[in-house]
Amino acid sequence: MLITIIRLAQSNTGALAASTFRALRTAGAALWSWRQQRRAASELHSMSDHSLRDIGIARSYIDEQVRLAAKRYARPRNSTRLT
Image (tube, rainbow, N blue to C red; front, side):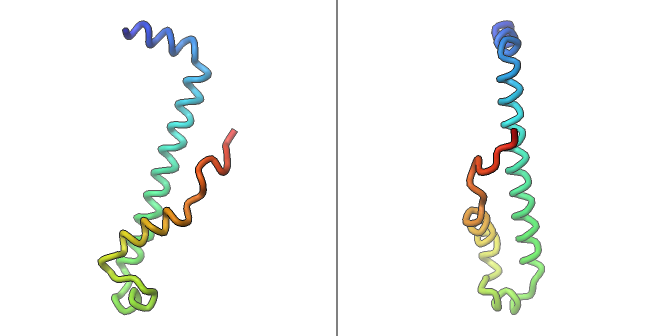
C-alpha cells in the first residue's frame, strides 16, 4: 500500500506539489482570517459598555457580530488567483 502511494506521488509530483500548495494557501488564509477576527473581537471587548452601546453592539454578542461581519465582507473564493 505504501509503495503504491509513493509511486503515485512520484508519477504525479507536479500535481501533488500544486495540490499541497493550494492546501497550504487555504490553511494560511483561514488562519489569517481567524487572527483578524480575534483581533477585532479583542478590540471590541476592550471598549466600555457605553461605547459599545453607541455603535449598537451588546457585549454578549461581540463574537457573533465579528463572525457575521467576517462572512458578510469576505472576499469570494478564488477571486484573486496566485499563479
